[in-house]
Image 1 (cartoon, helix red, strand yellow):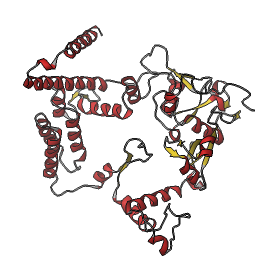
Image 2 (cartoon, one colour):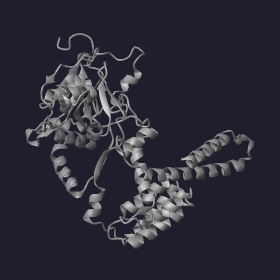
Image 3 (cartoon, helix red, strand yellow):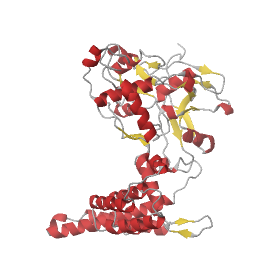
Image 4 (cartoon, helix red, strand yellow):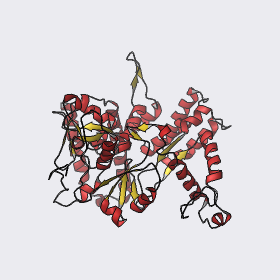
Length: 455
């Protein structure tokens, strides 16, 4: 540790000295040269950081490594996972018997640690290797990776991408891909959060089966006049007049057809339950917003839903609606003398907490379980609504076996307390699902500790 501390102190001093440099005093050509040297050292430092990431492991009381890394470095969970994945591909490995193995991307790792590559170079090489079909021999894949690593040391990432495309065509000139190759690419993800206008962008890579099924569905339900939200009574059997006045684009009709498909399945009893509730939407709104028909409701998945849309959706079956007073945030008093929370309690908890309550966790309510905040059931606690909160399964396990404790604060929030002696682990209250708390005045949020809760 003394040698590491000394190295970090020297690094800090070197950065301080460099920060004091007056670039204006340098001749114009030398400014480029200095920036090139700084860029190389930044890349080398990134490689050193990845080497440390590769050695991370969980210990008692530690959340999953990706979450702990995100919290400590204050980066997004997605970025933390990316660094862990990169480190796994660029760090040396060992066999089960302890014999050393080269990194997965051996030649890329050499250039990476030499400071010749940045993250964009690495993404190009990773994508190339990931997209190679299974029939390409491993020896050819290794030769291709070596070539790309060499080219990356002298090319920009956009130039390297063109080389990678030509190399992929050379290795697979006939464009042959197996079923396993296609299946590996399938997926659907949301591309970031909601936009300011509430809209979301997703990326779908569909296998042939899903594409053919959607084609059949869209042929009927994306036809002009079908499932048109502009009609007072949308229908699946429109008249010629209704089809003629449909001004939606083809993409908009497909969107509305997909929405009708999902909406028709929510709440269907044959799909069973999810965490004790029907597979349906859970939405939080205040009485004031509903009366004014303004503002947003929040779903248990974290989606902001405009109040007019919520009112319109409430006309459909199989929707739960939990109402809270917008002034004092009071919820219903619901108690139970058994271990497991009732469906009504789960709805209230979804609406009150919106997701996992451990600081920094972004798991929404749909992916969380009910947690006894003050005293667990097995230790004599009661299943009362004011003693219940939400936690995702990994964080719930932190309390069960990891030494963490939780307690309910007077304002109704849940405080997480890490094990003693682990100051790097973040405790406190989770504001991720409640960004409005960060905008509140110094008077603080309304409390729920006055008066008879049953009144």
